[in-house]
Length: 70
Image 1: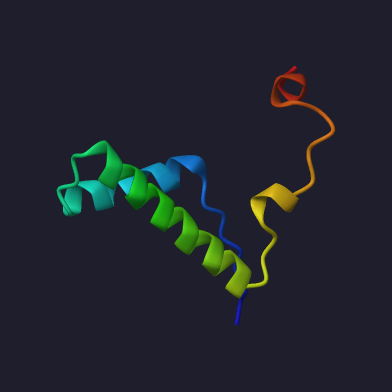
Image 2 (image 1 turned 90 degrees about the vertical axis):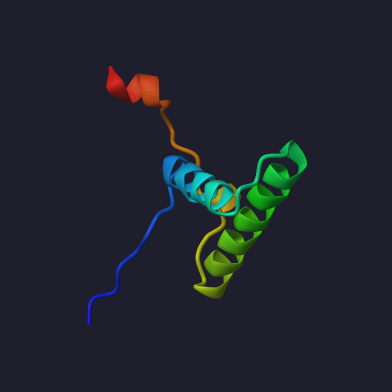
């Protein structure tokens, strides 16, 4: 059995939330903010449940992306 590690990118998070907003026909700013909040909260629960490292605890790179691109 192969263990796989998944990473949810900002783009994927955006696609996930946009799909939920469309599916539930959410149009008000308040409801959209609540939807984003709840999805983020659920994602963090999954990370904790799977003994993952929270994003704010990940090590910072020594070089910026612009430095690495050079």
